[in-house]
Length: 516
Image 1 (cartoon, rainbow, N blue to C red):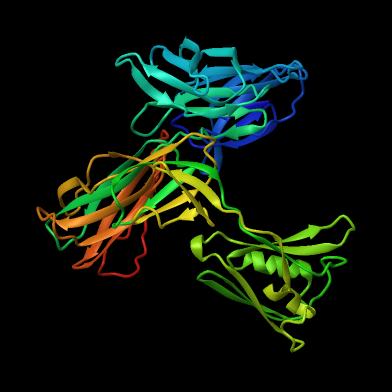
Image 2: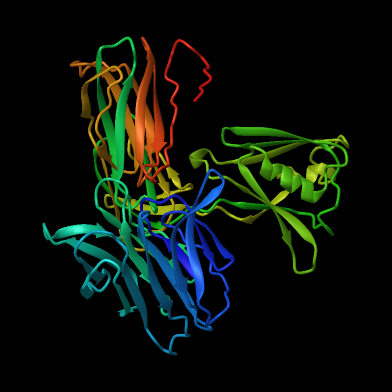
């Protein structure tokens, strides 16, 4: 049995199947798959935690057949929780099959049907077109294996797309559930969730709509204007773009053929176990601008302890114990990707007085490490021009812009647009706040200017806007000492439940205590 929470105004929900708890499930999440007694009707309750007590909001009975996976989707609202029951097909695919089956579920609370299209972007064809009423399930929609399937819904009022999953791969026998659910933020009023028996997967190209509220907490100015520059990105899961005030505005496209891999170094010596003691002294680990010195006390220099100390410190390198076929152990070291400055150097001050002799602690010095795997460059194309870089952090192609490569794009392109500076709040008075302003997930630069003066900027700062969330952007301070703060507002209302967030914006007082 598995339960998915699609109740859009809910906190985390506690689901109990008889006396068996399925866990605490947040909106858009699922419980683990739990083994339950088959062929037995059992009371199933849905509650939430309030003041250390469970408040029940819904109850039903569920029967799980033997050797079957039943997924229950909770939908509706906290005042009217509904249950959608799906018996999933977990049988082995027929040998030689090239297809899989989708199950589409309309778990939204909107009135009227949703028009849904299932499109194979690689074959450039629509595989299925159908209408789904709220609470309705459409299963066994057969689709050919592909690397570029997408699901989109149509707004019948305007006959325009309302939501698009973006491309995702489909393998034989995957049989995913695609659940259309209410969205609590601005913009499209629903979104999709993607589940298989193996777990949940994000839609690769889905950038969730966000909203910002801007407030002026600067007491010595009657009014200010606020401007922004932003990045609109079609796939931040594959390529993330960060900008500063010097970024060139424009439209760009990027495809990623290969990600950079950092080099792997290993110790020359093989050790019989991770309890072998290398002695004591100091390790100075440098990678780019990051330099950390670790003091290894006497008795704490075992191989296992050294790896733990390196990984738990603020060194820009990862260490790992590797067991060889003969049972012996070596240590591998991989520097973090810090862009063009990535360069691992380990210097040792060994207690035996010899710092580079491949004895004692000196065996971790880079002069005594061997290169197990060389670095591989990233290969990508921006606006038709191909580049190779020894990093996945690219900051020397578009002025004022850092591009982070996360995934290969498998022949597709990611489009991103860097905007010019634009006015979003005019003559915003002290303690005044704007209505919600739609925003894109990603990097945004905020500028504050005197009211009516677009040539003078009092302060500017780059902030990262989260996807699918309401956020408060506050500017505070006195005189020329200003600052922006971005605070997350969960905007998930629950009946009889209030959340108070406190923002300290009194520049005359360093620290305040707050009482209710």
